[in-house]
Length: 151
Image (cartoon, rainbow, N blue to C red; front, top):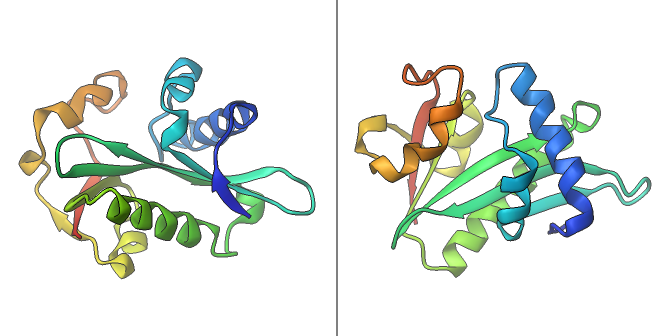
């Protein structure tokens, strides 16, 4: 079941992001930032266990620019299309808000290509985008791939 995140989901979202951060596949976010940006998140709740098995956020950056970020699926639930469903829902939300440029920074560009994202030069993104990157262990040598989808 896909739904907007609620306060009770924050610790589960945090745990998912921490898991992939430890693996070096995703930038973690502190609990305080998750509470600040909770309305950005969609979650997948397993209907049988009510466990949060996936999350994805749409963060607005500028007038026509938004980012898909914090896409994570519990390892016990991978291969079921949860990431695809979360990404589709986030793209639908971007369309609803009349976003024209939707980007992501990812270690898995092949996941985003079927959704119409294309690789771009990171330097084309506004500096405001990089404010969260300062805390990353890879900063300033980012090894993520920047991708953009025109809506």
